[in-house]
Image (cartoon, rainbow, N blue to C red; front, side, top):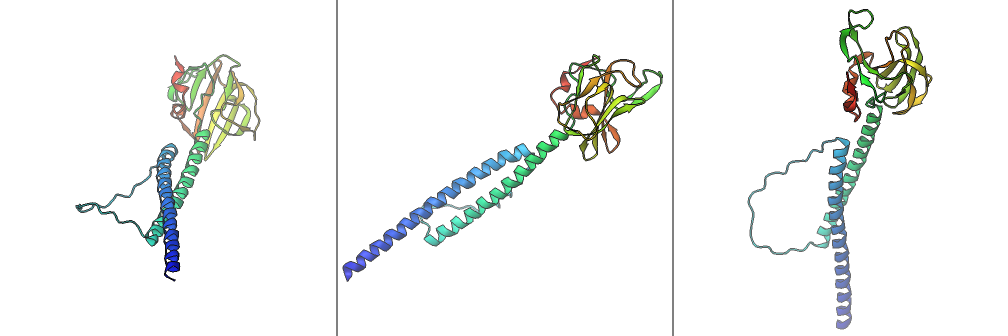
Length: 250
């Protein structure tokens, strides 16, 4: 009977030790997973432009003394595993939110008119007050003029939907593209229109060609950006791209 009891005790001890080893291994895996997710979250939050707020740790009073190992019991191991599993789940939720914000940022960037609408152009009249080239009087200029050869391709400055593609008495052949949230880009004095109202265009798609139609003194592209109908300085948007800095000035 004593021998049987000893055998059962050894089996029970081996079973417990094996379970404790498995739990300790699982605990180590979860600890490593939490560190990986935390590091990944820091990198993704930077890409998404989201500032992660860290909870400041409370000041701890001074402590010390010799190190005396105190292994965790099975109950304590299970509690720590449960806590870390909850941390992993929370980190996964945080990463899902950061992924959404990153996607939102990418979509927003695609809809901002930051691409130069005509290449190899010379910047003419800037945004703001100027002397009207035809009347010779002080007037308001609601866009940027890009002087280029007639027929030079004009491209969409961002993704959007064509609102207007028609002839205007002053703007000549004109295209308006809706980028959402009240943001519209305008391309005027075109020699031809390569799009029609309702068409979906992508950033960089050809939409027309430089011309001198309407009230114009020569081939150029008049480019506007309007927010809720109010003219904005297109340079503020174009400067966020890589091409505007290379534009030649008169």
